[in-house]
Length: 242
Image 1 (cartoon, rainbow, N blue to C red):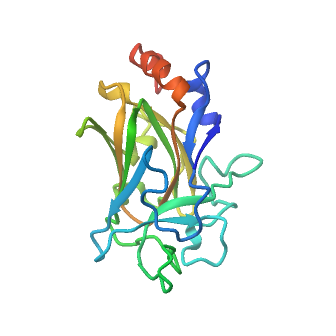
Image 2: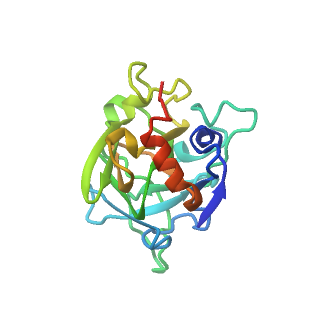
């Protein structure tokens, strides 16, 4: 469920207006099919053009001997969540499921694995109340250019902007972060992106276009007590990416 947590990557944006609200999917179990567990605040859906089913599932990154060791950690092979003295334990992350095997029909996949085909599909996040910023953790982007992953942001049903994952590693991009290092078994925390960058007060939907095998977690939005103040501050130009 939602938890209250002040994250280093969010503190610049949220200082003075409260802590960040984080969806970390810690209440799920490995392989659990994700849909309405966090409704009405957050509804998760998705697509997989490579299969006859569209399943978003939880993958416990702390599990060992899974079908995708690239999603297991810590230790991580690189990325900004692997460079601290104590590497970050991500726990459950969302994947586009490659199989739908559930022998006992309990809503938990027997052997969860992320879709390896490219493109893999989409993970769709719909918020009941629009959020003025959005951040996330990204696991196992092996080739940011060839996988062509991106984030689509929506407001009032209309797409208002897109940020390609290449922007986080391109030193001429407004979203460049020198701490982000993509690669096999790498884990990275992406700084929250404000809706003000696209001229709107908030996002009511975010779509992750998944280019290849990868997982996503720690969706960061402002806590209810800080959302209004943060929106106003962002529109006044408080935040500068570079």
